[in-house]
Image (cartoon, rainbow, N blue to C red; front, side, top):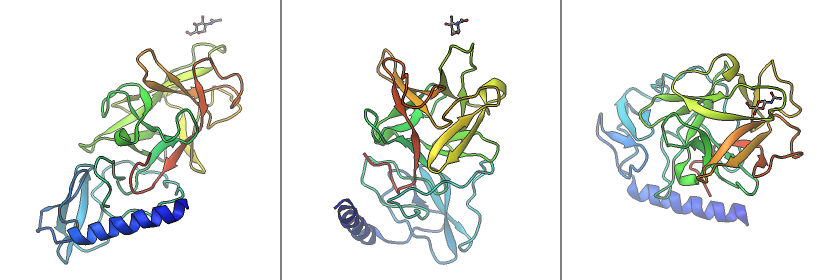
Length: 253
Ligand SMILES: *[C@@H]1O[C@H](CO)[C@@H](O)[C@H](O)[C@H]1NC(C)=O
């Protein structure tokens, strides 16, 4: 039932995209969040990603480089329900379209089902929180273990984890900063299947992909590394969650 609904939606989107199909001019815009114009470039030109709001037709056939200047990344794990998007994809208005090579990260359990990782102040160095699909940010994990968020202007934010003050502290707050995390704030992010893991040599913990989501006084769903056993002794007010890559064409509720 879910998959036939999905196919029907896919067919609708296909029809919509065919209807909108015309060719963008040389050096013209061919994609980006909110773009409803042509997404096809003239023969011999390639729709090239610039940032999440702008892709442009540039000379060169398929196989030319994507123009991305982000660090080497580990392969984004595939998640169910999504074929890999091409350079742009049509999605319902108000939704966030995934940039090729990036991944959304979201919780899949109540009370945070399909809430997506982002910055508390969107696109700004601030606490790591979960939020609605329409506010989803996009990520890669680099080969040296940094979790990076790409911003609409093409720059990055880097995940940093609070240093552990002492052995009684069982949750470490995660936040976003404009420079790569280092020392006690770095640790190593990696994909384990489609879940996000974090580890650091100085801390031994039973479950590397355990996270806590704890709303602050203003209701922001702050994200913490969970140092305790998964689903056991969860601090009051927090939800024990794993967080997962989602590589569908757009952030779904
Ligand atoms: C451990 O660190 C926390 C957070 O800084 C602090 O509140 C707590 O008093 C410390 N406990 C001990 C035993 O030092």
